[in-house]
Length: 236
Image 1 (tube, rainbow, N blue to C red):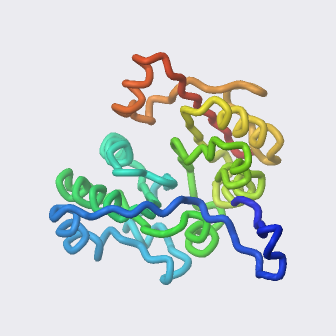
Image 2 (cartoon, rainbow, N blue to C red):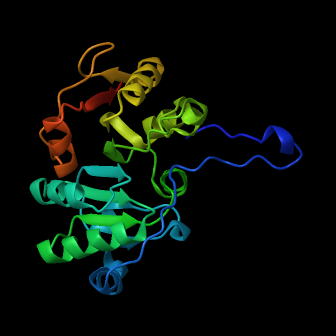
Image 3 (tube, one colour):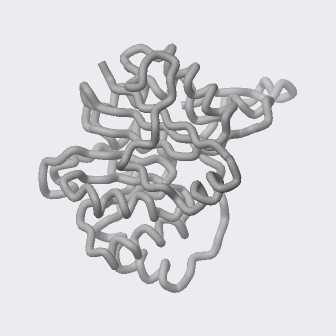
């Protein structure tokens, strides 16, 4: 959860909260629209409905994985299919991405996926019970690469403290980025965050765990010599 801020020239205005995303516009395909129409009633979750009971939402008690910013949903679908013993909640503000996730969920007949089309910070605060999550995934968040925009980065002390509250004891926060500067920023924030232990050892990055699929974008980056940095922190 990033810090509030004001414009120096507009100090009289109320503080405006930095959101966890940049809202991208985009037209939905016909297939995505049909998927929304058909699958949203059973797989869609609404911020307005407030605090959820995961057991009620999924009809069972299982480890709950929460992914922030799943894009077009392909890796989330792969994980949900591979880890059928777990339940997955994804949050994405880009509606075509949510539509694509719903389409893939229907095609694969997955019953262990639910989605929010809302701001992840608000969903966490208003909808997810404390201690409910076994794993939180934040993969390739906006790096805000310009130094003057670093304060907009999602991975900040306040936000990881919020995630710590939502994770079970022994739960895992998994971060990944392909921006080295952001990786260093994440490492600095996480090493100072109370209640977490670096699974790779103090100050170390982790190898990509088997549950995180290798995306086509990442494969292309590897061929070009680009790095990807994973961080795995367990709550203590």
